[in-house]
Amino acid sequence: MNKLELIETLREETDLTKSEVKAVVKLFFKEISNALVKGDRVEIRGLCSFYVKKYKAYTGRNPKTGEPTRVKPKKLPFFKVGKELRERVDN
Image (cartoon, rainbow, N blue to C red; front, side):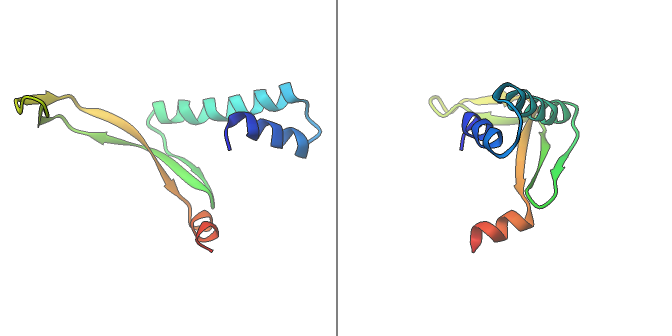
């Protein structure tokens, strides 16, 4: 399911117009993104959680030349599946 399919499904299940549903979905994703940018954890009980993992700088290697290269510290968002969703998918 992509974003447009989600919007269409929500429109069919609610009394909202397509533009209203689109605004709600856009706001939902925007707020999750904003929380992650601030370093907050986002938890949707039973479904999933999102969090930012921080990596320190390290020395890596260029795969073509084999030369050592400095890799800057970075932050990456992660998704962790919730227990209810994991069990539902597994059955």
